[in-house]
Image 1 (tube, rainbow, N blue to C red):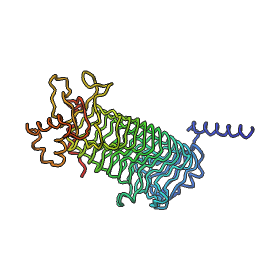
Image 2: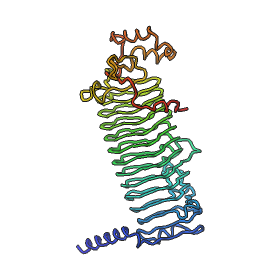
Image 3: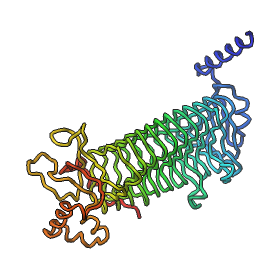
Image 4: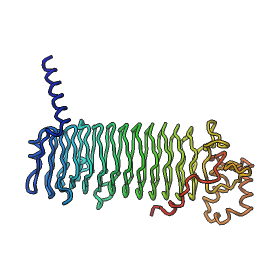
Length: 437
């Protein structure tokens, strides 16, 4: 009983000290001095300030304290790990690292060296306003909850091929992470997220990597207002549920803009998906809502496959994609109007298709005949692109109508019963030409 009371008193005293920064000591390190001995002497809650200069050492932080660069106007201090392992290893809760240049971790993919490695149990770590450059992994965060990674610039081993690099930020088995306003490039995957739940990813710029985000087995996360461009894939969500993907821009990626694979109960809304080889790649997706997205100028707007059904797909704009939908299925898939959103006389429903050839006799903004994404004429045009020169001719339009009237000539398709005549995104033309090279 006495031991339990003693532990409680120590914990309370530590919490009180951490909550009273006026009692924290500030330690200062000058060029030519070593940082690790100062970290070893510092107490919980202390601040270690590092003056501008270069420091060649690897650090281990074992107490809740702040490590930061001082005199930032003169340039941030540079900490080089000399390619000897992790440049900084965090082994305590409530550690803050800020305003440093952290570089030159080891290059062992087996040991997964990182610029900053946050080891299991190091909850509430904060890394902000740092440059992490020429590290194998920028930040590796493992089994540490409520971390915040904000306003950092992370650049990987850009002189190596993608398989030889590590990831920019790797989250494994975490909860409540906040990954905010980081700029990440020239890594394997800019953000690699596995078994990490209840996180927020907002305002990040991710480019020149394999995937902007490689995202697996993770639930209840928010992905908002990020830019992912000039990667192989922009955003890959695999084996996930209860995610919200909102108001992001993914463009110029050489494979897909947004991949949804084995995903349930998620909302994908308000995103711009432009100039990719495939805008959306949707595979084994159920009970998802896709609404208000702009899918423009992709080689394939949506590649839909593998029993991706029971989804709500409404109020999206599909404009100028060479192939609007590439559908692999054995029966028609209904998009647009539903029982709860009939599409006529209401506020929701159909999508806009730039290659829709129907009409709107009553001027309600909805087409009078359904849109079929893969009718006879579309399939002929995919095989013979030169047919595009004839798409407005009466003969081709008559052939399209014949295909609609005689089911023997049609294949299963995505069907939009009441397509919108006009796009909802007024500035869609801005995204024309943002193509991968």
